[in-house]
Amino acid sequence: GSERISSGIDAAAERYSADVQWLADDVRQGRGLGSEGLARAGLWMETQFESIGLEPAGDDGGYRHVFGVPIADPSNPHAQKGFVYAFNVIGRIRGNGELEGVVLIGAHYDHLGFGGEGSLEPDSRAIHNGADDNASGAAALLEAARQIQLRRGQLKRDVVFMAFSAEERGLVGASNIVRRPPGELDMESAIAMLNMDMVGRLRDEKLSVLGGDSAEEWDDLVDPLCDRYGFECAIGGDGFGSSDQAAFFAADIPVLHFFTGTHAEYHKPSDDADLINSEGGARVAWLVSDVAGTIANRDGVLTLVKTSDGPQRRMALKARLGTIPDYAGPADGSPGLLLSDVRPDSPAAAAGLQRGDIVVQIGDLEIASVQDYMVVLSEANPGDTAPVTVIRDGERVELEVTFGAPR
Image (cartoon, rainbow, N blue to C red; front, side, top):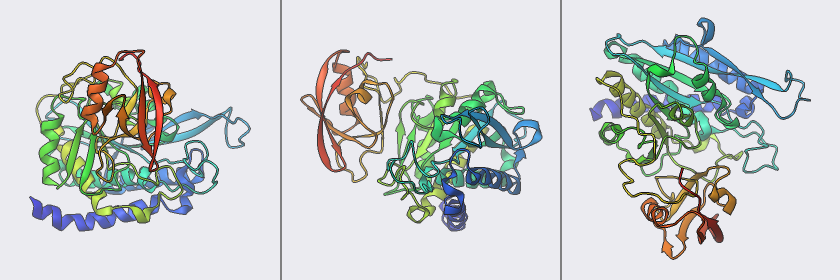
């Protein structure tokens, strides 16, 4: 009950804080692809997996799952033929085998190094420590593993833990696991994938659980656990989105992405460990360990929902813009549709909409919430144009969108 939570969470928060600080230390040089800092972070994740007691589940009996990433600059002396190598770190806790299937939990441990492409301060050559993105998720992965390891005697299915690399280059590590699963892992047996990306900035107990529409059962499974841990969860959205779960959802696996929301330091050198809410991050890890344990021990599999017509969205959407809403809404609680991302090559991208924009009006309709936005998409036709007002860095910006056809 809540006594176990309150008594244990302080120690968990201390472990969590120490792990975030290690990963997001300047010594790690921002954990950029091809850097010594990233390689050392991967080695450190391996040693953590081992000390927690996870069984190696990578290639050749080890924890590592190595893959190549094509890079744009073949003159890089560290690259072989325009490739740089990276590795995922994968471990397993065995259940008692009573139930078929495996539950996957993941978080990426790479970041942007010294910035460059992907940085929102592209001109600054400074270490981007990526404390929230995603030392916070990697630390939560370790804490979730500790909690599940404590209860492994009750597990009926295996749980596999995956620390992804090269997420910032386009989900490359996760995609490689889906394409060529290491060891005895196979995607057919994966019944769910839980992703933690940016879980370190909990404010007002608000937690986004994206991908909540990817299985019919998610709401009923996750909601009571959110209550148990004192979160105000917004559960919804399809399984796509801009983090590693998208690779698994594309392989027809129900997914969730736990996310404490965007902030001004996103993809900037200022995303540092001193801004992390360690108690919140540890509590997210405990929640995820409980969600994983619940799925590992319940009979039957989850019912995949492939389209975006989950329970929240009964209305037929006639048009599309290609935005990815942040279901938690603007951080200050003001009305509007906060964009957690904009899909590339989408009508929204063509109109100049950006991650972090708050959409407040489309055409004649004021947009106070995701629901208002759905109304617009259910009434507009492909090819229609409409003026859009967004708030960007506190200023109102006027744009014009041309609606596309729904996917």
